[in-house]
Length: 378
Image (tube, rainbow, N blue to C red):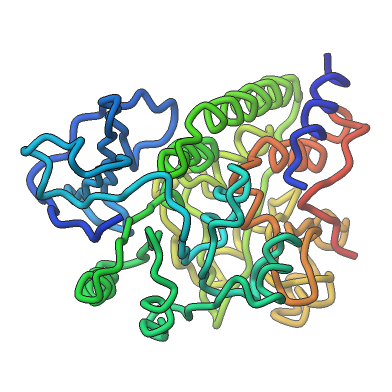
């Protein structure tokens, strides 16, 4: 059974108008039966669909955006005429996140991409080829968005995300330019499969719902199988994650997707007592006091060696987790431009990330698994 699952994993390895109604009164009823994702819902009325995105940036509360998708606007009832309408299937798309690139590529719609943000951070060979050939333009990032280029690209829809509420200013600017915009908040989902489930959301824009459903159920089944396997472990190593930046350690919250991955892989996250789903800013001293108990250290930022870690603070070299070479980073699949596939296809393949972590925490459970996203630092 284990060999069959590993073969299954390998076989599927990834080789709108602007919102015209924003509600701040109460959340939209959940029309779709999402298994993990809480940031969106889908109401399918046959000739049209109503998509609702809720609280799409950090710390937003009771905010939602509605979008109506159909092949013709005259299919909509009068009650929905004031909502943002996107003609589907879309053919020209601009995205601002590598995650969105991965979603669209998995649906087999990479050719629809005409613009993106941060082209240097793209890992996908197919997308990189489109960038190199000039078929895919970089539209800038944040305050440096190239609005003139976006207008020239004339997208059917532009998928955006926001870290803070000031993204609304960007939304209003795009609205003035009559660019169809859709908010996405998949990065806020605390469950790894919740992020993956957003492929249902993206599939609606391409009429690819059946394909998305088949893919998601496969990943869900794979992840569930692996997490059950991890329960067989007799001991849970204490796990440290992250790396300081300018004397501040932004530690993953105990309710975050990173913490959930550690738990499901049979690890004991050192900050599991914190229930935050967001990163927690900590000073180095408080982290060091707990880090002395760590048996495994994962995701140490940009570090590519143990020497890199010691260069930040020599005390790190005295930690047993470092002296025992039990440090692993999620940068195995990177290219020379800086693209890291962990942040691209990894969002769609939490089962492969989970398999990597089980191999790290409990190598006896998956002795034949080859790491996909992780590597051991030397």
